[in-house]
Image (tube, rainbow, N blue to C red):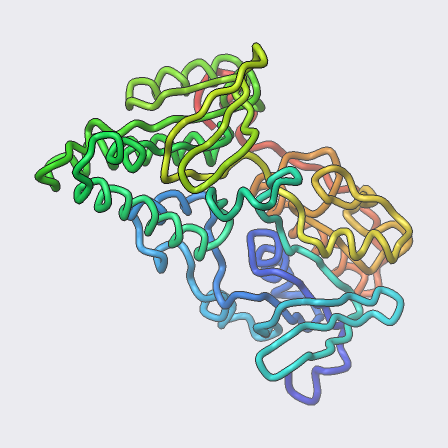
Length: 369
């Protein structure tokens, strides 16, 4: 920022995901200066991570540089750093950079640090069943999935080959359903003629879900339609199946009748749940609040932190009775920006956030969202 703009209202945004980016862009014409602090230098289009994980897309196709996106916005700057502290009393954000820690003051703060995979208290599962929340996760899974076919090709015993050709996806939400379907497409179509000893079409793709249906939040009609499509692709959909342990060689499952069984598999994918960024709990502790089971902090109806109207918590980090989807992050980011812009212009705006589910009308008619 140049010298003559430093005294303007300063907005710090933590995170360059959907929420943070939409908030920054919504402040384009506001009389404020914007600093976006993020631990990566790109904006990640998470809905397509599964295509990177299965080699369909390159990582660059879904991760444009944040600076490139905001380069035409004169009141915005981007800083690479991992936020390690927020002091809501002194209104400062401390981030770690390769050159040490950096403290950034703010007049208004938008916390949009998103979420990470949740293993429900079994964090050791992560070593053998990576989640899919970042480019690193997707590239790790790509290596594991494609290597599984290579290792199966060089095995000489059928008993040793089968686990390499068994892929297990845990969690039948949108991410799990997409991932299982894409692995099946990869095995049964894309790679079917690429090997000499093994037949990739014999690969087994298993989708585990503890609930009695896939896509539980989308209604019975869509759940049934998705299950049918998965089975047509060759995916084994196993419902009422709860994971009790995971190791290098397989996964232990408890079924609805209480019995346990083991699936021998060398490649597992975790898509069973998410937890808010630890920054949500950090804010809650300072504000004397609690977080919910997913680590989200309660907010006022305008997405601000109770008792601190200059701090906004949006997207996956806020406990506001809305789903953890990209549209919530986008809309709450734009809403926070609208309130901040009004205040910076001298108007004391208090306007409740109202989430508009843009897929609801289609789902009510039985069409995919």
